[in-house]
Length: 141
Image 1 (cartoon, one colour):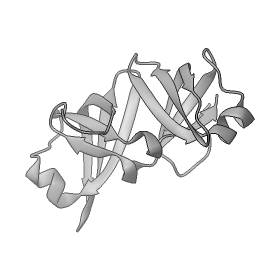
Image 2 (cartoon, rainbow, N blue to C red):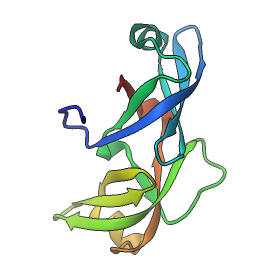
Image 3 (cartoon, rainbow, N blue to C red):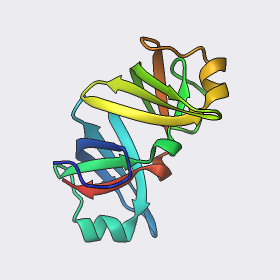
Image 4 (cartoon, rainbow, N blue to C red):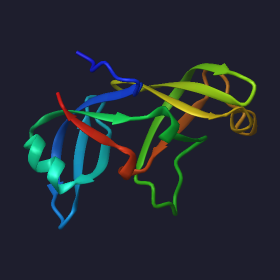
């Protein structure tokens, strides 16, 4: 069951790793589609949620925190790169909501209309969602 939130991107998965730090921790998540995602969250959140390998979770990402590329990008600090196919583009005067079908689900990216035009995105285009690990929140499933 999806949580009732304004965050459109709620991706189910399973914790694979937890790397603790003094204040922040990284949490590796295998999404149901098989993709690996990294979330950087507070150590306090890891403890409060009882996160450990095998835990069922949802990775939450606001659509405004999803960038798009036309293919995988190298030489970039963003580790979360999820390939997909554009299924819908809703454009307004300045912004666009781009929906991607990804293995195991869907992602929405809120980007500028200019970015959609510059990347020549259309329904059926392939694209890669780029998500900083610090922009991934985690909820227990």
